[in-house]
Image (tube, rainbow, N blue to C red; front, side, top):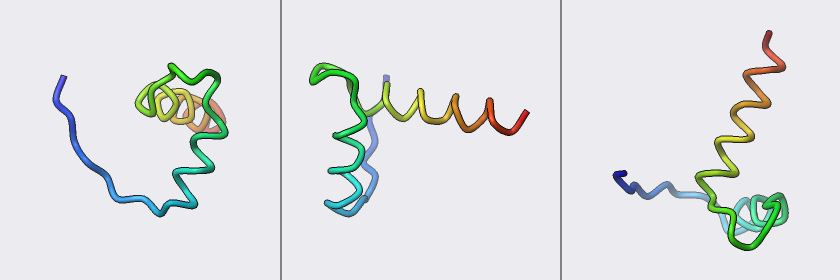
Length: 43
């Protein structure tokens, strides 16, 4: 898998960190879950 860098504010990173279900959850996994929720709400 390729890795990319995205620019986010420290405040945004903190908010994302609080949403993680565990310390081992990656930001990729968290963002994938959030995207699924948004897609589900659109239907």
